[in-house]
Every structure is written in structure tokens, then in C-alpha cells.
Length: 143
Image (cartoon, rainbow, N blue to C red):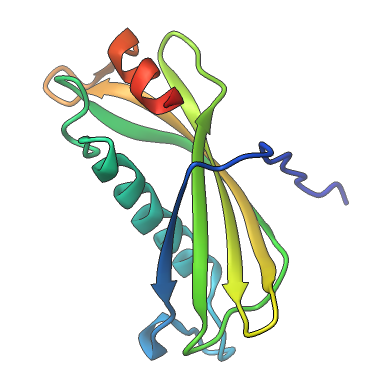
């Protein structure tokens, strides 16, 4: 069976810390795939916010996710603190990719918990159509 392999960029200019709550656990006693995606959503929100954006306030339009991939590396449990680093790359005329590096913070080192990518499209929610990615957004996202 072929596995997803995500090549992360070498540098990340943004990161945020999130503590895993008891309500984040599934019946197996660890964070499930749905919650991993929710954690990425939280990190994406914080990344956009520090640029003055939101998923519904993006240079006069919004953003919509076109795809998502997660490469799991380590279980997450209640009480873990995760550092999620985010960077934008892979720009085209309608959107871009966001890459995520999720690490568990431990006293001695940070351990890779997941690598992920989400494809984001610039979207006009009024017309329900994708629109061209504004140049100003590209410049801000590239930092």
C-alpha cells in the first residue's frame, strides 16, 4: 500500500502552542484523525490572524480548503502540549498550500507528531466560485 509522504519546507516563520484536552481524545485514548484536522484548523486560524486575515476575511473574499493530507508520526495524549508551525507555499493563480509541522513538546526535545498540508483556494462565498488569489495576499503570505 502506498503511503502519503509530505515534504515540508525547511523554514517556518510562525508557530503556536496548543494543549491537548481530555475532550480531544477518542475511544482509543489518544487524539483521533478528526481532532488532528481540528488542531490544524486552529493553527491555520492563528497563522492567518497574525497576518490580519481570517478565513472569511481574505482581501475581500474568503478561503476554502480544497484538500488535506496528514502524515501521522506519534500519538497525542491528554495534557500534551503541541507546537504547530505553519508556512504558506505552492502558490498558483487561485490558491496556495499551507504546510504544518506538529511537534510534542517534552522536557528534553520536541518530537515530531505529524506533517500535514492543506490546499487553500481563494473563494467568493457570495457567488460560490473560486476567484484569483490577490497579489497582496501572496506578498503577505510569503512574508
